[in-house]
Image (tube, rainbow, N blue to C red; front, side, top):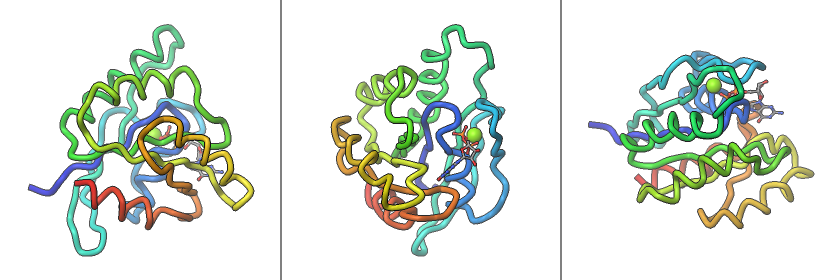
Length: 162
Ligand code: GDP
Ligand code: MG
């Protein structure tokens, strides 16, 4: 059975865009409206000749009430079946209350967590990524899911952790 990599984070940080990058097809649902990923969706993936399963997450309801908890609960379902986790943050926005809810859940787990500081489309935004060191999950990998920047290093780290 191939190892499982869960991609978690609050709505709109670019999880599905990153999954598309990883699987190399336009298949995960990417929308400007948060919360469009209907369920946890698994895809077969391969990196450096190693096969793994990547799980995109989402699927919470749209109403704002209790969204922090629901996002964290959704993420937890994926984390519990994963061998490693990529926690995606929008580096241009930084940490929000919803991100913090996911972090609290991740701290209770013993899964390896790799931080993807997404939307670092150019070098100017790399400073935003560095502040995510403070989460305590190690080096925050600056990536641009849309452009592919930094995704190779992120995947190297993720596969190493599984
Ligand atoms: P999800 O809700 O976390 O799955 O986020 P999506 O993958 O649906 O992306 C949400 C929005 O962020 C879309 O408009 C994407 O095009 C945009 N986005 C995703 N990754 C990047 C990135 O690396 N750079 C920029 N500038 N925008 C991105
Ligand atoms: Mg999505």
